Length: 303
Picture (tube, rainbow, N blue to C red):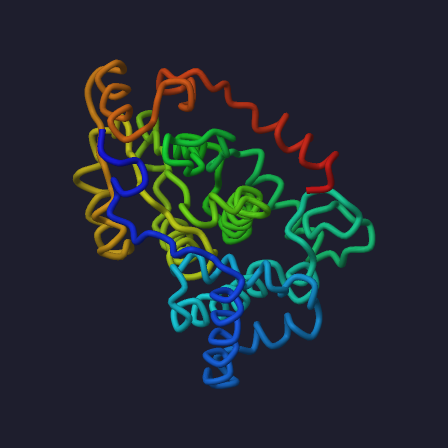
């Protein structure tokens, strides 16, 4: 197995001394000031309406995501807030992205407008659908592992409301992994995809494009690798050509395809620091998936 910290060719994080961080915060502010007003409206609005959500901890996630390239961090943070407001609306966007707590954006609040109530309802539908799920485990390098199974989209109707609900659910899951975890903010996540039982009719090109836009240009998360396990027959003819169009080149280089028997795929994943103990039972691992239980626990904790 290669070095678990460098196996995917990602840039290493610098040492975060107080002096270094102070300088980078100042550089980020300077870079943000250079961005034209019309291209940072969401960021400006967020600073006015929810300053507690745009504090140094929030900015640090974007700096870490871009390995302290302040120009790219400034661009991402502006894209992020524009997209967050587009997805969650002018009220929910300025609340913490939590399912619990009276002030959580995804809390089922009787005071919500009908439009916001629908946003929350379709987001919960997306969460229960379970297109993307946190395993609450890590590879040997410390990266968080998330699991996606496109076959769950058999219960998805390809409507605009459901599409946005799934995207908001992805935002929630990734934020829950990022918040408060310095290691994951620095090293990122590994995505385990299991499309084996998916059918061609489940493919939603618009959903794939929206998902990729959020991951590659908005949410402050470093995607170290996509491991696609047991792809269906149509993957090479339909999905991979689409991936080549919507996925940036640097991310395509981190795409790994694993086929063969269950044991063979597990052996291949182990070479990437992904032992059976941290993988989902769907592909032969030891982790039993319980999305409902995780959501209810998050709700109780106000997260």
